Image 1 (cartoon, rainbow, N blue to C red):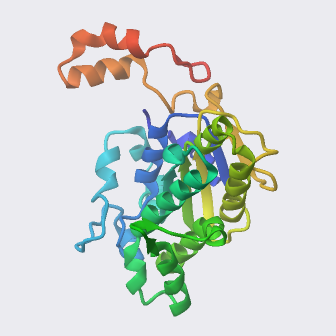
Image 2: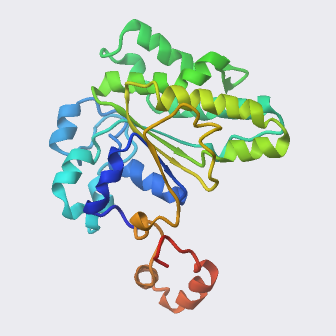
Image 3: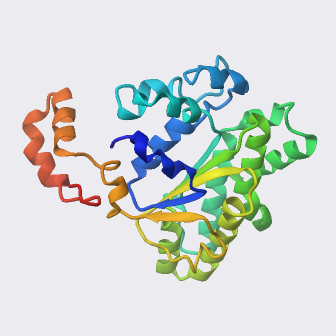
Length: 287
C-alpha cells in the first residue's frame, strides 16, 4: 500500500469520507494522524512530530520512521500540519456480531469500552471538569466481567469520547471506523436488521453529524450501504469506491512493489506464486 501523494491530500478535508477499500488503509491513516496515547504536552508534539513520551501511555514512538522513504515525506509542510497532530478514535466493527440483537449490541459495547480504555489518562487529567471525568467513568462500568453501558450512553458514546479527547488535547478528534458494514450484514443474516440499523444510525448520527468536536471521519467497508439507511440525515460526505480513479494508486500493490518486497525478504523466486494467489484486483484504471 502507498501513502497519499501530496496532490491527493485534499481528501482529508472532507467531513465524512466513505471508502470501499482494504482495512490496512485505515491503519495507515491512524498511524499518520494519531497523537501517541498519553502525550499531554500538545505544544511539544507540534514542535516535534516524532516526540516520544516517557510515561507508560503510548502506542508507538515515531510515526515519521514508519513513513520514511515514502512519497508523503517529500511534503514536509503537509506532514508538519497533519502527522501526529490529532487525537484519533478508531474502531473495527468486524466482530460486532451475534445470533441475536442483544449479543451484537453487547459486542458493540465491549468494542467501545476497550477503545475508551486506551485513554485512561483522562481520568486524572486536570484539563477535564469533574462532570467530564464522570462521563469518562461511564465507559468503565463493569458488570459480570464485561463493560456495561445503557442504550442511551452507547448511542452517544463516540461523541462523548471525542469531546473528552478534544478537551484534553485542545484539538478536534478524528474518527476512523473500519468494516462499518459488517454489523448490518450479520444482522440481515440473523434477522435483526431493523434494530441494528436503528443503533448504528443513532451512533453515527451523534458522532458524525451533530458533533462539534469532530474534525473529520473515515469509514471503510466492502458493501455499499444506501444513504437512506444508516446515513439518513448526514451530509457533507463523499463515497469513494475501488473503481475511483482518484485513488487508483493509493491502495494495493503494483508488480514492481511486490517484486521489491519479495526481494527484500529474499523470496523473489515466489513472485509467480504470489501473483497467482493475489493478482486480479483493479483500482480505478490501475491493476
